Length: 163
Image (tube, rainbow, N blue to C red):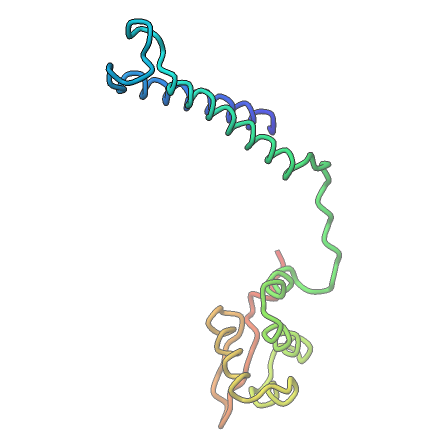
């Protein structure tokens, strides 16, 4: 696959060089300097696209080979069983640290807690707790239902479904 990419790049650079050469050759004025030999010789500045495009290709190829050396083909490691359902493990990877702390607290308490208890146990202020829960609710990770003068926070059911 890698060799195909290199060959396609080489072919593309040759076509680009030929296209640039043709554009300059056909659209350059006849009385331009460098014509020489009665107007039939190739102009000197027409050699620029022919030299620049392959040189650019070689520089790009060298950079590609330096940045992306051959990587040994390895089979992806099988995920270690963590005891967490797959959706929950995936969600935990993308959460911010504060959000992760709240979700871990909810998981450890069985998936339900009051908002004031979350604030108390995490040590966050009420405002910070509200903002974190608002973000989590917006992504569908939790639901909040009114419970007297606070909210009951519940983890979404889809986090615990196994495929």
